Image (tube, rainbow over all chains, first blue to last red; front, top):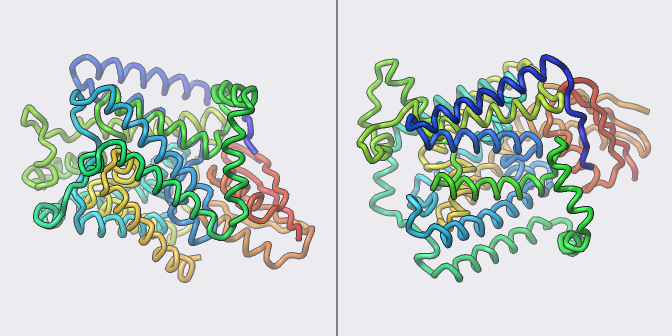
Length: 401
Length: 75
């Protein structure tokens, strides 16, 4: 099922690919010189994330919605594999760096903001057909419809940042921050998380009970087939399509490396929200006093808007996806098909932006990185995203398809 | 007999839903040709019909960013 694509030899395509790589290198080198060294790291990693997403066709929205809409759980399993690997990756970084880490991970309080934000985000994912990371990937592939999703995300994000002060009331007075290693110790925390992921993995076979043992046998047999494994690894550099499992593994490893080099895990939303904040300032809207942005003052007491490292990561993800799609001749500028899809993208995007901001994280920063950081808020967010996807799916199938 | 299902410009998971609905109407050994411009479909559609239904599936790249996925209904 894994297809090898010949690398595109089209001259214009080659020029663009070389141009992207040169730009990336120059930007990273310039940023590295005291201007914004954090952004140099996030730019490089953002490019990798975008590339891997596009090569493996990974989709978190599918993982949440497909169990209900088409009764298929293959991507849900891939996400669980990514979660498991990422958890141990982050734990390893804690072991290596310990107190040298600026943050322990994406650990946030569990409040009504996580519940509501997760539900709204899950609903929005189904309506628009992608999560925020998926939207960035498709922007890179040339889908013009996703610009409407992105516009929706920007509008939702600024609304979410504005309302965040109200939701924060519930954060500070009613919600605990639950970092599992603080509660149970590292060993028990890792054991509990592993058990939960394994149970969820088995549950994804809810309507295919005979497949559980077949899948497990496949996993264990991989170790015995070393030549095939070696060939698969070397093939990755020959620009072939990656399987969901490979995508999950490589994303988890890349996130771990990002945590190691940057000190913070992969996240997307705050980069976009800071872009919105900067645009608002340009339009004369005073956002600096909003609690959402006040919480992001860095150590020199300077608010970063258009210099936020995650904003560079977001742009680099689009560039990485663009590069990947050019490589395999998959880039195509596609115009939105109908007004219905444009409206769905705008509304869904707004829900994605709003939900992600009040919950302090999207499927990547909140769910993947939050859960991998062993913060209980990640699981709560994931659960309510699932619920939102379930309800959204029912409405989608009834009124939209 | 071949049946064309156009899913160009459709958001996920509409290509799969369209293909499923069309296949339900067909008899065994009839095929659908799903047209899609979604790179995700090259994995998701193929995986869905191969593993869940056990149908033979073939992917053909028609042009840059355009694919035809041929799914044969086998009862």
